[in-house]
Length: 216
Image (tube, rainbow, N blue to C red):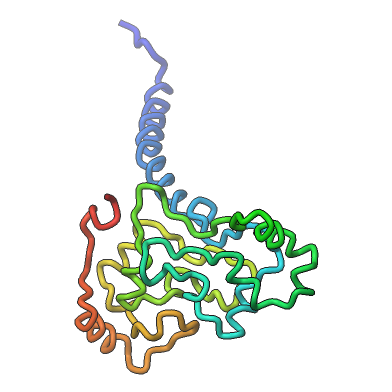
């Protein structure tokens, strides 16, 4: 009985089977790699703000503590934003009359907050609490980067699950004295390998990797 397919069909079929198997493996691996890249995670992303003249770099130069504006950081899940009336007294009236501060004047006139655009964001199914991190000695720059070097703030960290777990599995390596949580460019007075475990014991910090820690 003659063969149904010509001899060249066999190597072709093998090549197709190999290619299909490779695709089955490579596609999910490629997707897992892709979702961890900055264009997807948002790392390095900035957002245009309604007050273009606002500069984190300038404000930190005057040694304004992060918690002065983000007062909720040490007592609530959300760090919060200051009311417009809290910002105005620090500025000369002539500054506020410029076009760069139109959003500020509108906020004062309408008694509505300025619509700042969020820079750092985790998915809605992730619970993040600023207060528990700040009060346990996790510095602002650990997640937000060197804000004192940013005019327009950008997302400094990937904020992926793996990135968070890296700290949750061994929190001691990121801990600092609570008095230094807002310090930019922090350097531990002693080796972190010694200081971190000490602070973990003092602040009752333990590794938390249960799903319900962040997914509630």
